[in-house]
Image (cartoon, rainbow over all chains, first blue to last red; front, top):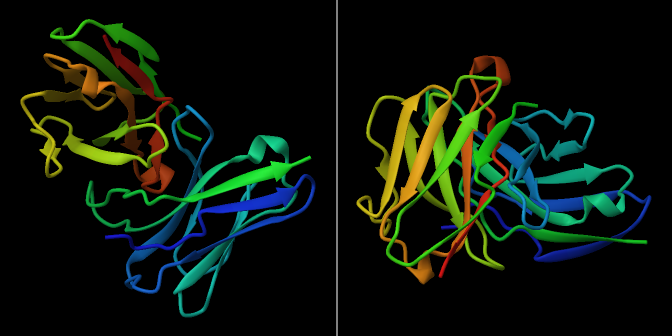
Amino acid sequence: DAKTTQPPSMDCAEGRAANLPCNHSTISGNEYVYWYRQIHSQGPQYIIHGLKNNETNEMASLIITEDRKSSTLILPHATLRDTAVYYCIVSSSSGAGSYQLTFGKGTKLSVIP
Amino acid sequence: GAVVSQHPSRVICKSGTSVKIECRSLDFQATTMFWYRQFPKQSLMLMATSNEGSKATYEQGVEKDKFLINHASLTLSTLTVTSAHPEDSSFYICSARGDRGLGNTIYFGEGSWLTVV
């Protein structure tokens, strides 16, 4: 059962911000929102995660709505190397070994020159 | 970020033989490791979860006698595909959960392509 809903594909012009949406309307109070991406034929790469507050790191920003039912991953200046499938995953993160990541179909982001 | 390494990255084996894939956490201890399988144009499917020193927990539909998982140390887990058949050809990916210093984040290996001929 998918816990998240993402658009199957998106295009973004090189140099522009890429905004990838994710709906997680059934998220529970102890579940985090994780974002990973998978470039073709490679293992998934961790991007960012958050619980309630917006988060920013060197790769991206994560904006979580106040009701936590949706979030947006922002790549501020997309490059061709950002072309990948982006996965939004919700999972609890408490206790030793108590959580795992279940992947949906993700969003295939194509950055166009 | 933390580094998880898989070996081999590509392997070709004959039908009926067994092949072992290693997954190592290079700069952190991983009490929990996960094994995924990914067929072309599909998403990752969790096969099993392994905790160091104990038996792996397999997802429904995954044959534990065919996909042997050993997690003998805090930095190494192995997946052995026994009596491989062409339908086992796939991209196998491991991941490891970091310790508290890494915020319990899960990091993935580079993946291993298995081709059974």
